[in-house]
Length: 179
Image (cartoon, rainbow, N blue to C red):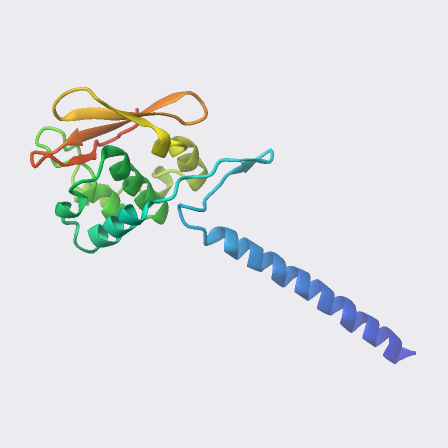
């Protein structure tokens, strides 16, 4: 009789442990998603972020090794913006800072000041997904020889992401690109 109850308790315990383990595995899988996979689930509506092209992936990989702007040669402003957003989600703030414009008169803070920005001021994944949603589907609008912005519909109306062309002719992200 005791063996029967013991077996039931062991089986029930095993089932509960399996369920807990599976839930942790699912949670870990959600936390490990990259920028390409991040989504917001809000009342069953999903907002998928973009995927980088093979060329953009290659540039992102090469650029973060040495921050040499030559890697950005030939990339359109929207591609540069996508690299910036990926750096935001990867929490690679040194890469993000390196993508800001270096054009004289447009630099707003130093690398050292950027490193002192607290994590809490950089926005949550959910906030950033909403902020950058559909940036890859935007249209670049050039406003001068070295200024422009990406106009895109983030789902809550039109947004703009400012870009500045540096002295070498490469498009870079404006400081505080969304205002």
